[in-house]
Length: 263
Image 1 (spheres, one colour):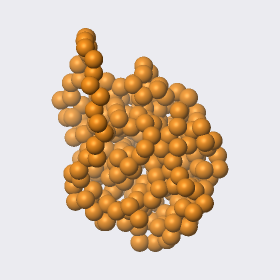
Image 2 (tube, rainbow, N blue to C red):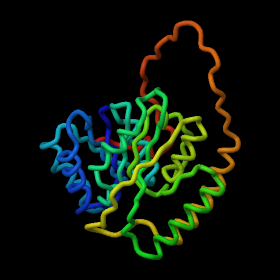
Image 3 (tube, one colour):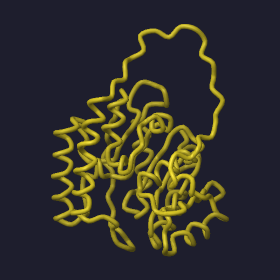
Image 4 (tube, rainbow, N blue to C red):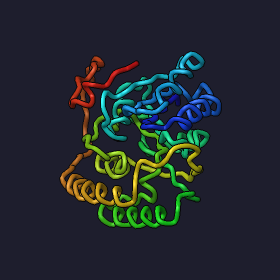
């Protein structure tokens, strides 16, 4: 099962080049179809690091937003651009280990098959500071009680899932934090696999505990409403031959997408 590895990045010079190189080194060709890096309008050396690697890796693709749009927008841009039916995502800070991707794929069902449509990473030994671990534990507990999604670590960036299933989800800023709940809402199975957690080598985190709490509370109640208002009935009968749809490029749905440029 070959995958498109999608990595959103903002000001990750010193991390992103190392992560891309490692991904090509550790994933065999029968798994790795391509790496798509989406630069969310970085103003450091992120672009230069990626461009320097493109001559060595023909399966590396670089897209850059025309202005900052956030991590969820970066994921969506990369997944729209991806050429394979299975997506693997990692954060651009290098804290996710690409060597964990095969274990996640081993638990993922083939697209359209029976079984998990999303497999998320579970950081068994988090390396974050005590305050960040406490905030994450509290947020995961609150979210689990309200959403009832049984997700133990929604903040872990390494996941694998069906591209088509993702593209059918409603898009909103910060949706990347709620993918397990959204997949469940659309009648998909989800699963989790323990993964490695690594220290950040360069730069600083783009999030604070207070900032996460403000955005998280606002989005959480929106997702609770969305889950309660989503009804996906099972198909009891499907007779007759299906007419295959011709693939089309979807038009931009926001200024952020309209300004996205492939360089």
